[in-house]
Length: 605
Ligand SMILES: Cc1cc2nc3c(=O)[nH]c(=O)nc-3n(C[C@H](O)[C@H](O)[C@H](O)COP(=O)(O)OP(=O)(O)OC[C@H]3O[C@@H](n4cnc5c(N)ncnc54)[C@H](O)[C@@H]3O)c2cc1C
Image (cartoon, rainbow, N blue to C red; front, top):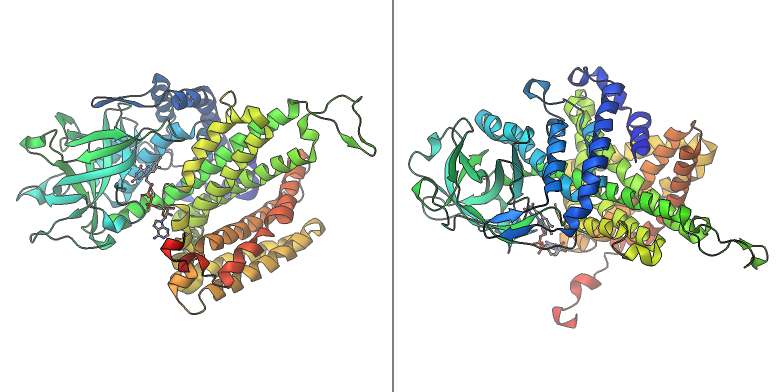
């Protein structure tokens, strides 16, 4: 994967140009390479061996304490030691001040080695980043700094047993804690009560403390809450209480683990049901979990979205890295597994020696599909990470353009790799035949781990509704226009290369089809009719985006030579021959506003 990352970063995304910007002036191609070397080494030496152990030795709850394998702790300590927790932070606070795209490329190496272990680090970084953006200076100093150093870990507590996709219906409540609640140095102080479901990293002893970021609704003086998402606020709830300087007071907060979820995949990431404020502990002499408000009341979901957009790109990146892991494992297997004979002009000759299965066209199809999905997924997510850098450090026009595109592409970056790199993992199992289905090989775990990515951080269906219902219509379609301009630019440059001209034309037709289906979906401006087919629309949209990116990669690779270049062109050709034509089938029901799914009476199912 490293060679692919190097091509994407340097040849395609031109990250070296970022070092001319003041924020990254202390960096160079060499420092970027040194970071990736370190990530690659720790991933290989610590994460990869711990990955299978964490899968087989699931977290256990022993009363109030949980048990995790020692190798998980050691791997995460090595991650913290690498400085990657503070990769994007200012050097002044001990960060590496890396571009987001290089940070994500480094993390892809960890995801490939162990997605489940990486999750602890990503949650912690996401949590701390949110506090840096929306917390008070003291919240940043006390909580975020301890997380960037690896001393404390972080979670995000949104979901509840009865509220997953529909966060407006959460029932966790917050009450001001005493008359002086607004004068606490750590932020306005509340008591929280409620249950949070599915909380990754919710309980463990990997660090000294856990910083929970919790969504809850504030009860007003009349005992009411604001209905819907507008009523949601955000709180930082430490597992162990701390004083104003961040020193542990020795007092346990009233948040306890009520149970563990035993899952298909990501088994190394502990997943918990947390009870807040049930009274098992009595911090400061009373029941109720103590939480400090972050940001203004009612702004909780907006603040949380700060974490979620990057987290969504991170989910897509993880899915793509798992796709790469399966591709590499099944390719290595296909090179050595002998089975069957080549088909010559006279058919098969049993007198001939057996051939490696890599020689069979159908196995090559499965490998090329994996390559197209996984490398395409990496390209998409790193492209989005590069847009994050443009948004943060580009000039005003470039930053605005990047922001528009990022809004539009985020649901695609989350969902496309989650769907197609899962399919890649399924194909990896198929390449290994019966062996792929056993635990003697890693590919079944990749598939199990990857299956989560279509669910968390907003399900596939929710991403589809976000794209068709919101993102496309934002700023009167400015995001789609920005994307159209980039697609057009790529088509122009590809059309000038004879080997790519046909694909450039095919992409033009696909884009027109997508545009006309988009218009048709919203013909009578009825959300119910349009959104009933949001998922096939998302899939078609994603495939058009990937077709654009594959053409762009091929055009960029244009003058190169060697097997990597030949492989890239073949993956592009594969995508245009086997994948892009699928959009016709997906867009038909969208354009026709097919109503069978939404209109079928419940009792007819
Ligand atoms: C392993 C794991 C780890 C997780 N980690 C965390 C975590 O750390 N923190 C956290 O807060 N949460 C976490 N989650 C929760 C995750 O974000 C939710 O599972 C997800 O948001 C979906 O919620 P749900 O499971 O309640 O499903 P539901 O919301 O009940 O959805 C069920 C199905 O209905 C569909 N659906 C729901 N509403 C609509 C609608 N309006 N229109 C169309 N379709 C709809 C969904 O797409 C889905 O297919 C985790 C989940 C898992 C499985």
